[in-house]
Image 1 (tube, rainbow, N blue to C red):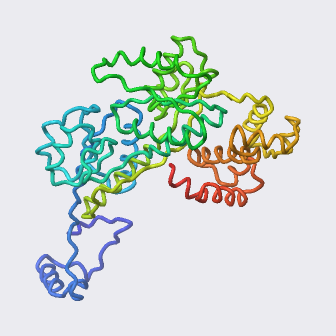
Image 2: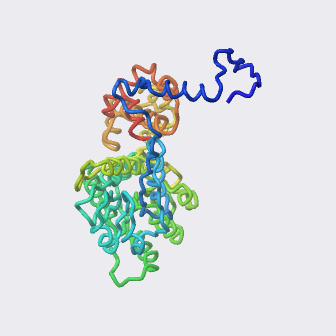
Image 3: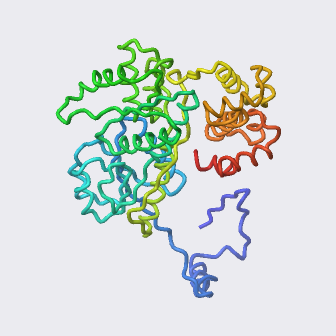
Length: 430
C-alpha cells in the first residue's frame, strides 16, 4: 500500500484512487472478474520459461598432439557458435582402453577417435549418437570424419616436385592405416609425374620401437641422392632428420624432408626446421560437431565418410632448396618465387635470366611440367590462399599484395584455377 512517500517517478495518487482496505479489496475482486486480453483471445497466460538442459557430450580424444588439439578446437568453436554443450573431456591417451564410466554414462552424444578394438567394443552397445574421427575405422556403421590423405599426399608431392626433385621416397609407419593410405597416394602421384619412388620397408613385427632410428638411417644411406622424402607425420619427419644428421647428409641439399600435421613446436625444434603439410583439423572437428548436433536432434547418418582437404604447406628450411640442375631454370624459378607477388610477367623473368623465351619455356616444361607464366600464377595463388585463410584482409588488399591489377581480376582467375570464389574458399578453409 502507498505509504505517502513521494517519488519523482511515482506522483501522489489522486484522492479518488485512495481506497481504504475494504474498498480496495472489492475493487480488485471486480477487476479480476474481467478476462485478461490473452485469455479473452483464447491464448493461455504466459508461464515462466523452463531452462533447456545443455546436451552432454563426451570427447574421447587425446590432447597429447597438435592434430588432436586442432580437432578439439573445432568442436569448441562449433558449440560456442551454437547452443553450448556440457562437454566431458576425460583423461585419454591415444590407444588407451575405454574408461569404466563409459558403460553407464547418461549423456546425449559422443565424438571419439576409435583407435583400438576395446574402445570399439565399448561404444557399439551404446544407444547414443556417435561420430568417429579415427582413420582406423573400426566401426564402419558410424559416420566418419578424417583428413583427406589423398590430398595430403598430392600436396606433399607437388611441394617437393616444385623444387626440381626427380627421386622421391616415403617414410611411413605401417602400424597406422592413414600412413599406408598416404604412402599409396604418394607413390601414385610420383608415378603419374614420371618420377621414381622408394618406400621405407616396414620393420619386422618383433622389432623394438627403438630400432626404428638405425633402420631409417640404413634406408637413407641406400637412397640415390638428391632425394625428396615425405614422412607420414611430424614425429617420423624428426626421425628422418635425426638420421641425416647422424650420417652427415646435408639437408635439404642432398635430402629434402616434408612431413604432415604442422605441429609448430615439433617442426621448429627440428634441425633444420621441418616443412609440413597443414591438415585442416579445426574444420574437421567443427564439421564433426555439427553432424553430432544433427544426430542428437533426431537426424540420421549411417556410415557416411567426410574427408576434409588440407590447408597448404608450411615451408621451413628442410625443403628450402632448388634441386634443378639447369642453371637458367633454377635462377628463373628463384626470381619468380621472390618477385611473383610484385606483379611481374614472363618478360621480367627474361630480363633477369637472359634466354630465348621458347627455349626457357621448353626447359620449364621438361623440368617442372609447366611454363614460366604458370609458375608465376601458381606462386601468386599460393600466397592468395595463405592470406585468405590466415588473415581477415579484404579481397582488394589481397589483390594488391599479390600482384593482381584489381580484385575483380583476382576473383576471376582464382575461380578459374581453384574452382571456388575467394570468399567461399575462405569460409571452407578457416
